[in-house]
Amino acid sequence: MKKKAIPHIHIDTLKTYNDLLGFPKPRNPLFSIQRFEDFPLLPADGPIKLTMDFYQITFKKNCGNKIIYGQSLYDFDEGVLSFFSPKQVVIKEPDQLSNTGFIILIHPEYLRGHALESKIKSYGFFDYAVNEALILSAEEEDFIQNIFIQLEKEFNRAIDHLSQDVILSNLDLLLTYSNRFYTRQFITRKQHYNNLLVKFEALLDELFAESTLAEKGLPNVADIAAAFHLSSRYFSDLIKEHTGRTTQQHIHDKLIDKAKEMLSATDLSVSEIAYQLGFQHSQSFSKLFKAKTDQSPLAFRAGFN
Image (cartoon, rainbow, N blue to C red; front, top):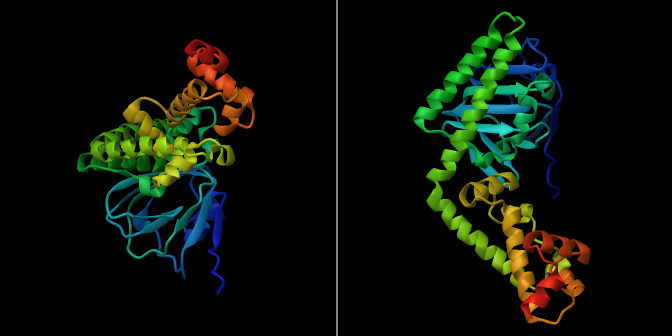
């Protein structure tokens, strides 16, 4: 039996969004903040695939909504913050219970010319999966809620020439503290993540011990993160927070160790070694090796011998 396709809704404007929910015309076509308590329970036969042309920031508490991202199901039973980039695909299950909290929608054009336009792209959590949401402590939850309330008050004021600056300043504050709280989350879950780091090193050892690199190519961040059921960005930020080095740097470290072993213990040519390590072009391998060791592969072999 053919699996039923999930309906896809793409929201490109706030008017489309408000029409879908039965809300009045938006106060601002590029920015919106709404309380989930005001949302209607939309009838739905099953899950809906949603994409939007907006950055989304959701603050949810005491609710029973379930959202699927990739293969992960996340149940918002605690106070959490979630972040979504424009056009990020989210599959939303039908509403079961009323929500408490806020949703902010920001069109990229609203940030044009402001420092936040580039700064927002540096926050990796906008590319995290839903199951990697920021779980807030009670104190953090109160603090974040106050920022949302301040944003709501400013949004509902009569618009003047400083309205956008004040809103963006509060958004900047919200994102700065979210970044701090994510760092805290990495630290408070240190024991769990220490186990993950051990498994990460073991996986790299296993991948570079196999003779399939020529066929499969070099390990990449996305595949390694997927092995741990995490998004690439979350996994990379986690590794960087705990080791001071990126996932790609760890991969390259393991690669160089393996290359040194092959250069010193075999008679394989540089081209053959490059091929066995998953490089299509030996020049790329030689360039990386020299960048990491300050020696060409042949110079390393000659020095070792």
